[in-house]
Amino acid sequence: MLAARAHTLRTGRTCVNRRSTSNIITRVATLERSSATMSVDIPHQPLSVSVGLIGPGLIGKALLRQIEQQAGKLLTPLHADKFNVVAVANSRQMLLRPEGINLATWEADLAEKGEPLDLDRYAACLASASGPLPASLPGPSCSVLVDCTASDAVSGRYADFMRQGLHIVTPNKKFGAGPLKQYHELRDLSERHRRRFMYEATVGAGLPIISTLHGLLETGDKIIKIEGILSGTLSYIFNTYKPGMKFSEVVADAKAKGYTEPDPRDDLSGLDVARKVVILARECGMEVELESMAVESLVPAQLQGEGVSAAQYMEALPQHDGAMASKAAEADAAGGVVRYVGCVDAENGNASVTLRTYPAGHPFAQLSGSDNIVVFTTERYKDRPLIVRGPGAGADVTAAGVFVDLLQVIRSHPRA
Image (tube, rainbow, N blue to C red):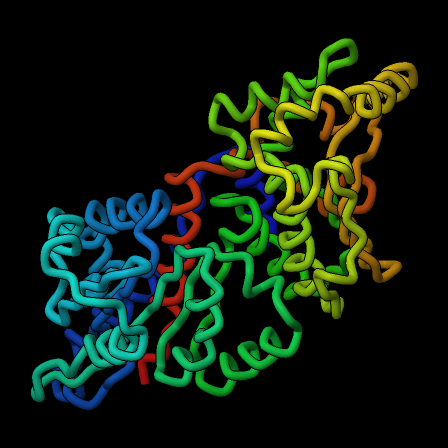
């Protein structure tokens, strides 16, 4: 399995899990041959799938489009008789339809027919929406909450939602990088209640970063180090920035092209990258808290804080071009480049986010555009580290990463 995944990463091809498909076909054939046991052989019954989305922004909308296109095609390979989105909510309103929301009109329906958001009612509707199949054909149901917000109000309720029987899928980094106590509590609940917490898209958008790490660990490999350029914004900025250029102008260019947040300091502070590093470190078994990790901010100290507006920051940034110019010139003189990198040093038990110099032949120096790249150095991949590279941002690819997690949840849902 790991070899297949590594081959897929090298060639860029899509890998289809034929094993799970053949298993489904075998089960269906068994049912057809043994109709006498059909009514009691619950593990072989079709699954009833209900999905709830909170946060229909760019990523959420893209996910709903993808589900609308694919849901009907997935019934057979998922061995399901129903795959419905039954709840959609933004920060103010929710649309609850246990029978299934019309994904062609959901946006207008939410605006015109939505009711005030109530997370308790939302979760209760989702938990019960799958409902029983006809009495003559009892079967399992699967309810999945997809959180595409950046809201603490939603992620803070994950444990409650899981106790109600919901699986949770999210690209929201705040929970995975939040307090260790709530992180461990949810992991424990996940094991006890047989409900999944999936978060592939928290690191690298649609890139298989988390799943690759899981595959390495679960097959007994030992992680030595994980290094990555984990921000599409900072990837673009440092792939563009060259000695002789003004750093402030490159930042302004990235902002004008939509690569940065409205306030570029949200990217340049390093906090977003730090959250991703915390998530990776915890996957490696490290007890890391975000607040205790070494993070090098690229925002000058004088321009930090709420007392300086985004406009004031952009206006004052040219005064600080010299510091970055010195670092770039020093790296260039040594035949290298500067890159903003997150690192999990599992061997020594520490994690950091810093600006580093890499030789021109290093994979980080070969990156282009806003791509992300992660290098896994392990006992098996020591001499030639395993590399995952590709788009690390964008609504469609992030939504695809969330969608893959959703399908993994459905395939692994207990059927007895």
